[in-house]
Image (tube, rainbow, N blue to C red; front, side):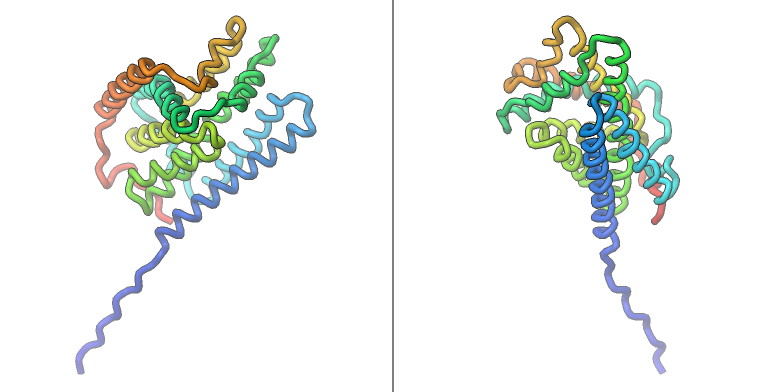
Length: 274
């Protein structure tokens, strides 16, 4: 008798299912964050405090707990270290890319940004304690929480089933959509840069620092003088010269990051198994 041959294994759809599950889990955290913060703001007289507490309870904590359920937070959220030189390079690259992203966004969707002005009103304060709370609510917690969720959990999960460029693009689009129609394109473009930095360095921390510096600059500018210096991001037009200079500086800084962190081999920075 001829020996029986095993039937070929049927193809599985675990890859797409995993990617879809990661997107749904990230979306669930975002819905929780938005709804929970809205409820706090409705019952709290201080919006900055409500946003700070909402970020801690409904963004940072759920993302951390989800990472604990999936595996090691260090691996799932990409919490490993990175070369010290990368941190200022990443921060400078994001700042340089902002006029480029905002300029492109305004040319595609030429609308005003009233929600950005609302943020500026939120972070302006007459007392140091008010400014500190506003900074924590609008700069610190979003920088950590959004990098953990998008460039950490979501991008890491997508990298298990998608090519690197596709994973970066998918998380960037998700990051852009949650920022609303007017800011979707700039946020998506900046999300692409932050996603590349996270993948290249193997860590979310350079992105956290860059995100924090970017957000903090708005808080600082909003509290200098009459605060008009911070309103450049609400304009419907951005100087072409500023965009070109920003693009050139960003390219130089990205090249510097690439030299500092050589491309990882396929066997390095392993993604934990399911």
